[in-house]
Image (spheres, rainbow, N blue to C red):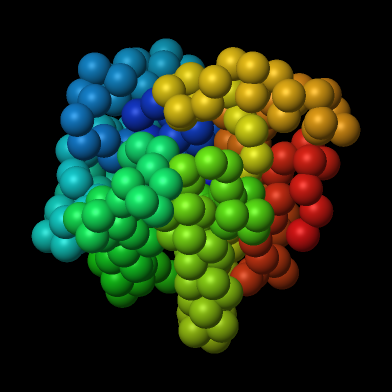
Length: 250
């Protein structure tokens, strides 16, 4: 129980990768704030899973595109579990839609940037004064941030590339306070994200191009998040770590 006595916030923590991370951190002893916005049913199911395993968690509704909601998420977490936040996982985000440049307008571009990038900035602002030394922030970037993404994903890929750069900047700025900041860059992971946005034939082609010849799982991402948040990774900061089965190398 390596996180006993510690508190974690997982944004977008109700389903898929967020759910797996929430469950894993709770299994490892953390008190977990499971953030959700419009999927209360999924959030409650995540809580039920955690509690069935003997973990401790609360679900907190908050819109990660809103400044006040980000700060409220932190305050409600502190009310539930105590003064300090030790682990922040910025998982909320999404592709929204596949659009070519000719199809995008300013509102779409701005929303994707707010959802994936500005939300990460706002959560850093909201949490940082409540993080003691030896705390950690893990941002969810993407392989798309390295390679530009698939068709119609330029806005998403750009936002995730910016998350990678922001991660490096925050590692430099917050390191002297004893706070580590890293990002994960998942490749093709078997989630509803790809169920929604990626055709089955494309997924199969990508899987076959991957040296391990398969998609990854949310649980594999969660296991690495737990490792990266722990003292086992105490000298890792400013890293953008690929988890893609060998499909692409940084």
